[in-house]
Image (tube, rainbow, N blue to C red; front, side):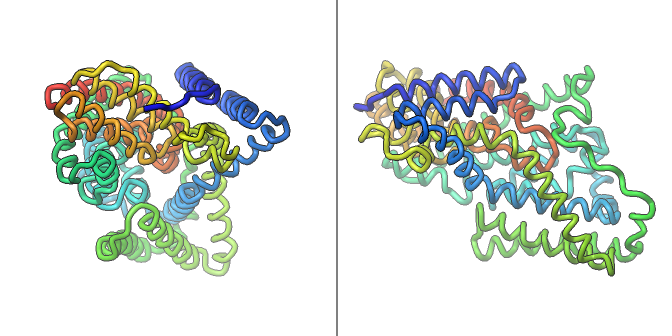
Length: 466
């Protein structure tokens, strides 16, 4: 395939290993990420001043990429603060609390609802919808916030996004690159998505139950922020009982209308998230003005400040590591410049192609290689940026093996999105972590074993399907 691996590629690999190692040891990765950015920039540019500037520029790039997520999470948190302070939250969740009575019911109910909503609108808006309503119930029945984040993460960013049966953005990219009809890739992915989802979610639930029983996992495990202080009786009297009931009905109705509008206008991803975010701002302002009356103007600003403080506090630790991993894809050119080899398609894609070109060809090795290539391309935290490469590699392997093009393509797609779409890469899983108030690095660690086990079993199943 003729990809030239340079010192830049090998330093990137070295620092990926260091970052993963530090995360496993529960040590902070900020310094490691910054040193990695600096060394890659030094080798690429040969200029000390340009390399120092690259550190700052990489932070700007990372913040720009993450800003829509930071913004919607900050707004949702601000709205949740208003609902909690005024007591609307208690009234709103009371019907659900009668249905969800155990941690197990909370885990599976939240997960399945998250998966269904994510199939239609992708996970980010689904996280916002689910977290605001069902998180308090889950915590009250004994499921830790970390368990709620895992459920939303594995079912939404994992199962729903890796199959993408409704919107079909992922299978369209991989199918086009592999030269296959989209329907073939979707058909081939159904058993693999089912196996991956079942193994991962059941394994994750088993570990959750085990650690909750032993006391290793508690309500406060993995929290990145101090739990909200319960509102005072005086605050709860800001609204009358009838006003609370009115808003408790109005809020779900408004979000339901959002869902209808998304369906009618075919809004997905960022557009759908923007609609949820705008609706949340409207709800925040409306309840604040009614409850705080003459002090509403100042109080609205106060709620927004609280939300933004929360958002940037959660993202602060993630920006340096995100800045490093963005160098693996399009970020390199924008941060450092056009300094990769001429035939390069980005560091992570080059590494994936290089790996595919040196392995012996058989259906077993082909399946393992597609899983590894998919996982490598997912390391940039997008999940989608490398799946075209996965389709191309699947075509080459299936031609050599003589079968299994659609299965290999689907397998690589699943690996790329489970790793990069939001279950293992810390900044990709931030929406679920932030809404639940848990540390994204702790969430990534909790997901690591279930997702790895799932990928291994799914790869073995794929070998028999090729």
